[in-house]
Length: 108
Image 1 (cartoon, rainbow, N blue to C red):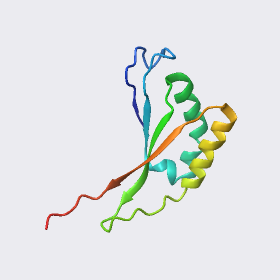
Image 2: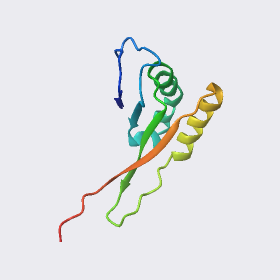
Image 3: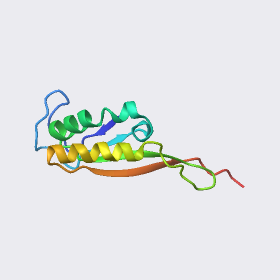
Image 4: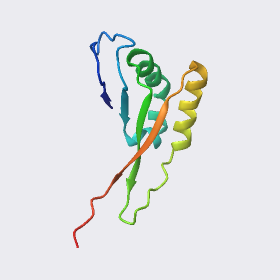
């Protein structure tokens, strides 16, 4: 995971709640394809949200193929259900944004 802390005035070991601005996290493709990774969502959401104010998650939805198609991630629904369950249990809302990677276009 890559954590982008913008405007941070604390350290990773001693966060200062409320002094972070527009924090976000980039999550790898494993979060929408592997149940074992999805099992970590509640803990990650709690730590990121409460300790660092991270409420925006950019999730890699997969690789766009040469035809421009994105195969559906195997466990996307399970991932989103896990996020939703955490939100309901904690009274907080996360912004989840899908992003895709692409195969570079070959020159003609």
